[in-house]
Length: 196
Image (tube, rainbow, N blue to C red; front, side):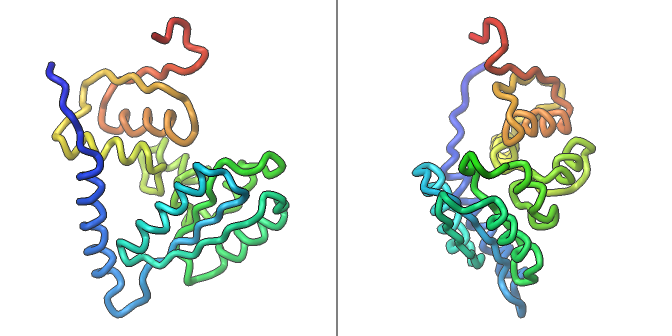
């Protein structure tokens, strides 16, 4: 089998162009959709990721709200902000950038975001929906991988896939999405013997 190079940047450009058209149709006569992004602390990689999300929103004519909080923000302060965002009818999606400072429980934060506004797909209801093959928000990296496979015409049906990593954000949902497409998979991780 010959390797095929997947041009992710070109695919992303096409997805963004299509998204802009969808947003225009959705917003006709109404307000544009709104994503609230929360960044706690000053992790450089997180700052770049969040900046790219805000830029992608602008490119697609999606309104974005950026809340940058200091690393000293308490868990209670962050949960209070999430409660306000959950209750705000002008906010359609909430993304709290992970990782969070060590004194804030990521699990508590994820549980607090409304499942209907959980664009990361991390809330237990969205994780459960994925496991049951139901509609819901899904983590973006595995969705991107599945979209790439679709774009190059690769059907995972009946194929064997090796998923490396078992995180709740990428590895486990990737395996579930492959299973939805009738692939057989194995998950390897840091404790897998002879991973190479």
